[in-house]
Amino acid sequence: MLCLIALVLSTVYICLFFNKRLERSISRASVSGHGRGEYETLLDNNRRLKEDNRILQVKLEGIIALYDITKQICRSLDIDDVFRNFRNELTKYIMVQDCKFIKGGQDISSYSGEDYTVIPLSINGEMIGRLVAEGLRKEDRERFHILSQQFLLGIKRAVLYKEVQESAIIDSLTNVFNRRHYLERFAEEIDRSRKFNHKFCCVMIDIDYFKDFNDRYGHIVGDAILRELSKVIQENIRQIDMISRYGGEEFSIILSETDKAASVFAAERIRLAVQNKHMRVYDEELKITVSIGISAYPDDGKDMNRLIDAADSALYRAKQEGRNRVCAYGIR
Image (cartoon, rainbow, N blue to C red; front, side, top):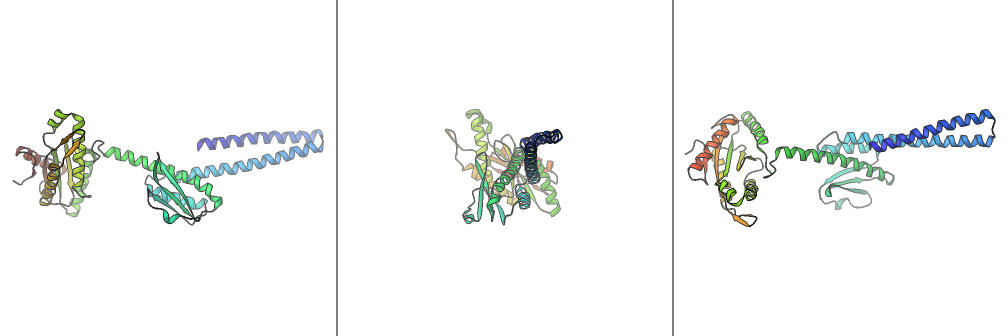
C-alpha cells in the first residue's frame, strides 16, 4: 500500500514538473511571436496534463482513503469487531443492501443468485470464511474486492494475535493451560468464590511410576503418555472446569462451584478412565494409573498457596497408601 502511494506521488510530481515546463514554453512561444498553431498545440498539451494531474490526484485520494479504511478495520484484535468496523466503513464507499461474514465452512447455499456477491477468504491456504454482499452494484464490485482484501488484513492480524496469546498460556506438549496461566486463573477463582460465596476444589493429578516409563521406553514415549493423559482428563471434566499442566508429569484442575464430596466423585471418574485406557504409543501398548489429591475452598484454605499445599499433601498420601487412588485433604 505504501509503495503504491509513493508511486502515485512520484507520478504526480513528474506531471507537475512537465506541466511547469509546458507553461514556460507557452510563455516563450507567446512572447517570441511564433505561429498560432504551435501556441495552440502547447495549450492543448497543457490542458491534457492538467486533466491527467486531476485524475492522478483523485486516484491518490482514493488510495489514501483505502489506507484509512485499513486503519479503521484494524483498530480491534477481535474478529467480530474487525468485521463490524469493516461493515461500517464499507457503507461509506459502496452502496450495498447488506454484508455478512460467514465463518469457516458454513453452508452458504441460501446466498446464491445474482443478488449476492461471495468472496472466499483464506489464510495460508485454509478457508476462514466468506464475505457475502447483497445488492452490490456491478460498478462497485471491483472496489468491494479491494476492500475485502483490507478486511482480510484485519482478520490476519486478529488471528496472529490470538495465536500469540494462546502460545503464551498453552503448554505446547499437552495443549492444556500452562502453570503461569493456571495460577492467574486460580487467584481469580478465589476472588469470584469469595464474592459469591461459592465452593470450589483444587485437584492434583500425578502419573504413577512415570520415571520408570521414561527410563524403559525413553522420553519420546513419555511425552506421548502426557499427551494422552491430558486428553483423557479433558474428556472427563466439564467445560467450566480448568485443567493445566502444573509441572513434569503433574496436572492440576480447578473444579468450579463444586464441594469436596462431588470433587471426590469427579476425581474417581478420572482415575478409572485412566486405569481402563489402553494407550497405543508408537509400537507400545501401555497402561498407566494416576494418584489424585484434593483440597477444597474455603474448608481447607482461603488462599492459593494453602489450597495447593493441601492438595499436594493429599496427593502425597495417595502415593504413600499404594498409588492409583484418590485422597481428599482432611478425610481419612
